[in-house]
Amino acid sequence: MAFEIYTGSWTDWSRGSVLGATITLSSRDASLLLAFIAAFVTVIAVRLWIIICFTVHQILSTNGKHDGLYYQRQVILRNTKSAPAAAWLFLQQAWYWRGIAISAVARTIPWALFCVCYFLGFAVLAVFSSQISDSASEFRLREPWKTHF
Image 1 (cartoon, rainbow, N blue to C red):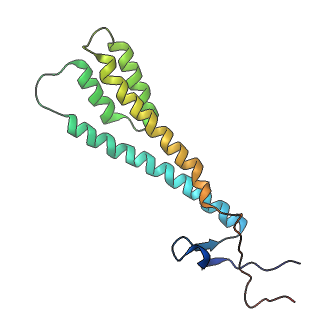
Image 2: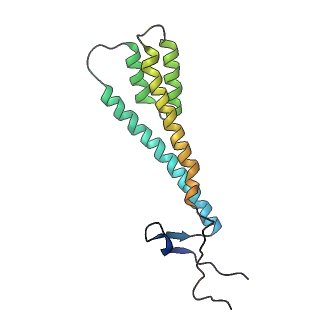
Image 3: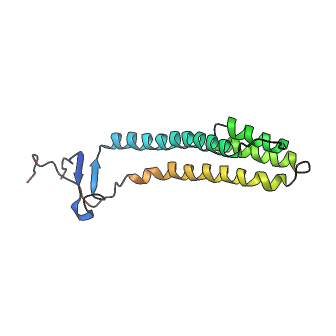
């Protein structure tokens, strides 16, 4: 026996007023919503990366004499648009400056690791954003005006 399932917002009171807030969508609309959420998380990751780089660049900017490693790090922070690109540039920087600047690897590798962790964190968020969909919910609402006997 097929029932018409209510689509729209409703509250599953067995989970409370906050956690029970539910929206039921058709399969097509749910797929579009999940795709939008994944894309939204990606856009937020890129924009937040730009804000973090700008902030760190400004905090680390000081007057006075510095070595080339410092200036190159500032250029990387100022000009990279993504965490993977910055991680790759920091790794290259550590490799090229390893015998030239004092503790070049120790000064550069933490930045590369931060970039990798940032990228992986948002990659996991984008993948697990699909968990917002709870298609195996125990309850469904039938449309009240279409009762079947």
